[in-house]
Length: 220
View (spheres, rainbow, N blue to C red):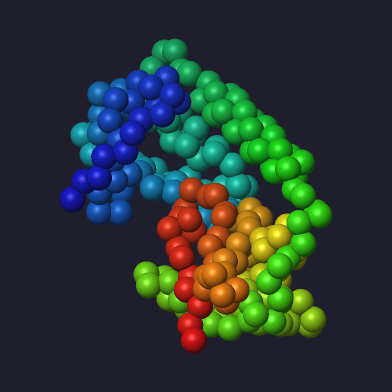
């Protein structure tokens, strides 16, 4: 089983011509060799394991930070095994990409805050938002009140996907899940022609969990 993944501008800079995902491993070519690798992490920690089967080498990289340094160390390690005389500065290159990404994300957040219209008051009573919802793929979610505030829990993983809801504009609310890897997000409630709440969606861009695919329908 192999799922192709498009190469990025950084991949092409490193000479990578193909990428994929197969049986739990990310695959790519580097310096004429097939490389299998995968990262992992928890808040405060990022790791990377990599294998180069043709050279019978591999490595495990452990860091106590949340950066892309493990990727730089993986590429640098392979260069060392290859005994290259001229070794690229992967740490510096990846740092440049990281800073550009963080700047872009900050600009996007700033633009969103500037567009916020505080005059758009909610036209759905908070009491009408309360109840149990369900997405046909993910499962159930619950909107309740907790210490006087609206509270959302995605029940299959409520230990991480739970948050108070802060009114943003109209029928959209800001949230920050307990999962420290996730940025802030926004929940929007929708009603039918009779004014009954029918569903909510979540706007929370991130590379790991595709919230935009979820549509939580309110259960009667």
